[in-house]
Image (cartoon, rainbow, N blue to C red; front, side, top):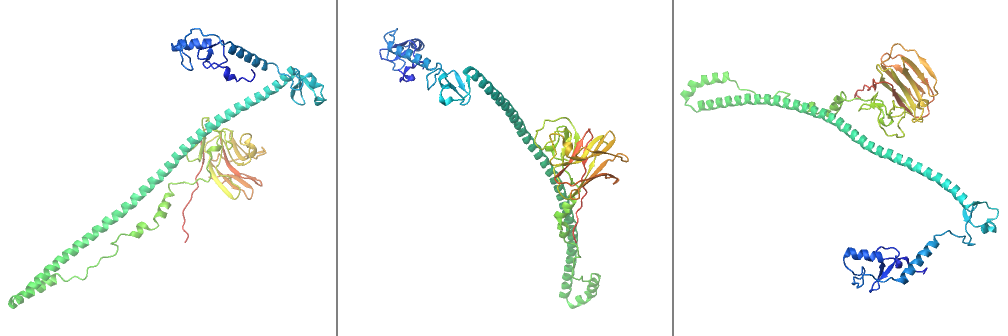
Amino acid sequence: MASCLEEDLCCSICHDIFKHPVVLQCSHSFCKACLQRWWTEKQAQECPICKKRSLRLDPPCNLALKNLCEAFLLQRASSNSEPLCSLHSEKLRLFCLDHQQPACLVCRDSKIHASHTFRPIDEAAQDLRDKLLESLESSKNRLESFKKVKQSWDETGNYIKAQAANTEKQIKEQFRMLHRFLDKEEEARISALREEEEQKSCCMKEEVEALSRDIAALSERIRATEDELRAANISFLKNYKAAVERAQQHPLLGNPQLSSGYLINVAKHLSNLSFNIWNKMKDMVSYSPVILDPNTAGPGLMLSEDLTCVRQGQQQQLPDNPERISECCSVLGFNGFSSGTHSWDVEVGQSKMWDLALCEETADRKGDIDTGLWRIHFYDNKYAAVNPSGKAIVLSLRGQPQRIRVVLDWSRGKLSFSDSDSNAHIHTFTHTFTGKLFPYVWCGDSPALKILPKKFSVTVEQ
């Protein structure tokens, strides 16, 4: 009985252990209820397997199969009962804390468990359940954390696509502006070329027409002279004086020559063409010594498309990437400095609250970023210079500067601030810098702060 396969004891209709099995003349057996339901649905009294028609409406019980199925169910039920110790066939009443496994009373006194600690099964099970439950809760919390991170990363993925689309749009607009300039410049230069062509072609046409008239007059004189030469002597002599006077009235011309300057001035149109266009293009482009990095901007800032102007705006949903400053109105420059001398001007205008600073690369962007700032602070009509340790020096300034110049001499360890309009000195920090420093702007009210463009020129070495 124990060796019977379970599938051999299953009804081919319900696929479960036979219940009240009946046997047909063809020797196939089915649950009585399953067979009656089959016949009702098919409206045919035949075997579901071989399709042989059954002559009896009430097939007899397959008693042997019924007994076999009942025995099988009893055996399966007994196998699912309380397990016994595999060594002593005793009920498992204890739990060995050293071996971390159930044990019977005989096991407790055996040599293999000498000096071990035991707990009752129920008590040990509860303790371990509590411990596993704690681990389960930790796993659930970790799962929720992972889900939140995934959601954040999904949002960051969408933000990346939006960033790329917006950046592509601005790139195309910049190139459209350059194309418009180049198209306009091309049109102007071709127009000048065609104007010169038309002018010189007109002059050339007038010269050709004048020469054509001279050719016609000279041809006519030659024809008349040839006629005189062919005339009889008396007639020739009579008309000779008139012929000479006619020749004197229209003296022979020398070889016609063009004066200089009739050809297209190719050199004027093509000389250093690309350089001259580029030199002219500088009037429509600008260079900013500091570009603000939108990936560091706090959620309360709005940056201009050229990334040189910043103002306070509505709170935005931005990815919490490692570079971003948590403080809502702060932003860093894109390029950091770890050598050399650098300067830039910031237009603060009438803003009532602002910070201009250099930020250490190691500053805590998600916490107290002030501990990494060398800054000039303006608030409530008061100026102060604050170093990373928090030490503040109150500054006394004449008036309210509209533009602040920042000069960093990294190698000499000097960071200076001054009024760029009057060159009045505001404050200088001295420190031996060891790491990279990034321009920093904090904008505390709505008027914008702007990094001013540098003036530049094009020179040619002689």
